Length: 239
Image 1: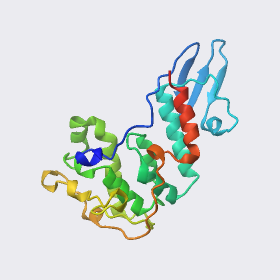
Image 2: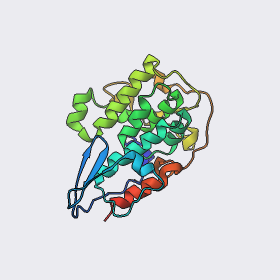
Image 3: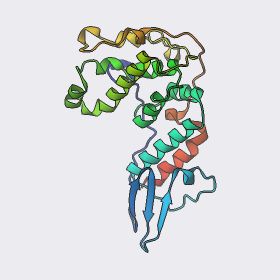
Image 4: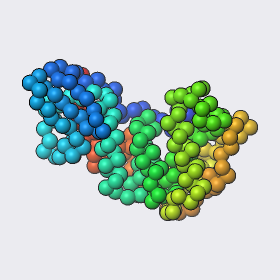
């Protein structure tokens, strides 16, 4: 696949998150802390919130949102789903996640102490950590590849948490040198240690034994349970 052909790129695929451009006709749209306010010509104000879009009876007619609002609401939708489920669903998401999608979703998973170590190790190697090791520090990454800064920060957080014992549970298996989820691909082989200004910690090369679960094949990593809502958000921000 394409992400194996270029070693230094994270595991990205075609994006489900369509480019969404709201048609601001007769209304002004602003976003405040995850809420979307739609102000009509007569000044009436309606608040679009995560609870609204989760309501099966919500009226989507004439709802129009911008690309920025789509990004915020879709991220909130994903995190809401994860909060309502456990570490297993995080593992399932990691197996099919499109890394072009929101970084906040991965950051939320990485920030949870009950996230499985196997899930974290999988995410780490799927994010191509070797690429970020060519930078001596965050400032150098910012100067030379500012677009990679969010991923750089997540990689750093994973290393700190992993080495400190932050993740207390380990149920799922993962071997970065023999990935059963990707046709036994060797992610370690992509790492060019001689080119690295900072080394990958040795602990992150060690395989974890445990359970292997089937890839749910969620499109772009979006759980089936909320895919209809995600599609409606996409439609709401398309021309």
